Structure formats: C-alpha cells, structure tokens
Amino acid sequence: MNVYHFKKGTEICNYSYSNNILSVRLNRQRLVVCLEESVYIHNIKDMKLLKTLLNTPSNPSGLCALSINHSNSYLAYPGSSTIGEIIVYDANNLSTVTMIPAHDSPLAALTFNSSGTKLASASERGTVIRVFSIPEGQRLFEFRRGMKRYVNISSLSFSPDAQFLCASSNTETVHIFKLEQHGPSGEEECPTWGSYVGKMFSAASSYLPAQVSGVMSQERAFATVRLLVAGQRNVCTLAMIQKLPRLLVASSDGQLFIYNVDPQDGGECVLAQKHRLFGEDEDKEEGVESEGSEVTVPVQACPSYAATVAIPTTGPVTTTLTGYSEDGGAKKGEVIPEHEFAAGPVCLDDENEFPPINWCRDGTRGGQGRRL
Image (cartoon, rainbow, N blue to C red):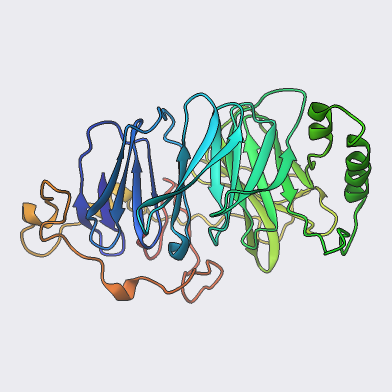
C-alpha cells in the first residue's frame, strides 16, 4: 500500500502486507486495511500500526465500513462467513463494541451515516436492508427492497442528514428509503399514502403468522430510479447540491448520473444531468435539464494520477523517507501536519475551499490536486 500526499505530489509512506489488499478505508484518525482473514488499523497521522485483527472470518470481498466521523471512529466487518453477523469495533479505543446478528445469510454491504450513529446492512440475498443504532446495535429500521428475486447489492449510502438511505444493485433499479421519524403518539407529522399503507399492513400483521407479518411490517422504497443500463456494477450516494437533494449514480462504464429527489413525495426520480467521465461525450439525454448539463472538457492534456505522484522532489529521496520498522512504526516518515486536519466535516459545495473540478479526456481531474 502506498500513501501519497496528492497536493505535494510526494509519497508519504508505503507498507507491505502478508496477503492481497482487498479494501482500504480511512477517516481523519484511522486508516484501515482489510485482507481476507485479517484487518490492520493504522494511525493516519504517522501511519504507525496500532492494531492487527488476526483470524477474522473469511472475507473474500474485503467488506468493511469505517465511520467518517473521527470522534465516533467505528469499524464494521463480517463476524461470520456463513451468516450475517456484524462486528462493530472502536478504532479509536481499539476495542470491540458489539456483535449484531443482522441477517440469516452472509453480508453483502455495510455503511455508516456521517455521524457514526447508524449502520445499514444488506445480505447476499439482497431483499432486506436493516438499520441499527451505534454503538448499542439495536434495530431501528427494516426495509424491503423486493420479493421477486435475489440481487447483489453493491452500494448503500445515507444522506448527509441520515433521513434517507439509498441502495443500488446489479438490477436496473436504485431504491431510496426514508427513515421516518414518529412523534410520541406514533403519528407522523406529514403522513403520506405510503405511511397509510404501512399502518394498514402493521394492523393486519398481528393476525398473521410471524414470518408473513415480518414481511408485511417492512417499509417499502420511498423513491426509485430506473437506470438506463442494467447489469453493470455501480455506486450510489445522496448529496445536497445547490441546496437540493440529489442522487448520484456512477457506473463501471464511466458514466455519472445525477437525479433530482423529491424529499416530500418521493416517487420516480427525474434525471437532471448525465456525464461521461472518460471517453467521448455522449449527446444530451432527451428530457434532461439544459442548464449545466454539458460537461466541460478542456482540450489540454492533464497528467494522470501516476504521473502526478511521480513528480520528483527536490534533493535525493532516501529509503528512510518511506521505510518502516519491523513493529510497524514510521521510520523518519513524513508526519502529516496537524493544521491539515479540519476540525469538522468539509463542504464540497464551498467553492472557496474546493474549487470546481474539470474532467480531462483521460478521466483525471484538472486544477488543484487535493490530499485525501
């Protein structure tokens, strides 16, 4: 694993592991490296190895989630290779918090909300999505994605305010679920047609067998998106852009779709913009908003990521700059300065902090580089 300072174009350190690296997660306190049967936790500021979790259940996909809130730096990973158990680990205090029996079949997706107080999970069946409180591990919500077929859920993501949860899979549909907030009397402030149907199912479920009543009490999708192409791996996320809720879906063929989300009524989301991140730009989709739908593609060639990090530094670079001692501590490695860590979350809409990014034809970003 190589850690680069993207703004300076220099390598901070590198580290070797005993097996293939399957995934890497980081926040402003910790960097987590997941192997198939072990997890390594590093201190992000000096990359010292703090903890090694050995002999973890077989995890061939490298599934894990790390809260982006460094105050609640919780790590979640599978606690079993045969059923959907979740181990929640405190990466700050280096201790196990709880084990959550989330699903009957193995886990397929995990994600925390931005504050690290909620954890969403899905199993390999892909029919039910559950949300738990953290660190207690209590089940808060249960959503049913579908009943007709099993799917491979590839992405789960909370909205910034944790009021919505989106899920994408290998099908053509992206689902958005609303985490309904009920008052003391159990009544919603703004009841919708979906809530009335849910109450009807809940009332009827008490007269039915437990397995049937469980299915009927699960919430359905609040909003949906029909993708133009099915069967491709994609990643979805919910974000506030220009003070409006949007759903972003990036597909493995290099396309980015931006949809408008109606936070009050839900329903079918409307495609607002479409971008091709590499290759030739496609024509505008019919019915897409004209404002801002064009992609600015500069003519000049932009350096690739590999070329950026290969920029030579002044003076000779010795092996001690990136070397590591046997116990995992940095050996004269570059320590990231304290002032480069923001106190709170950053706002990507703030053009003063994050200037607009232009995409080059080779898929790299033009303009000023930023360090993760």
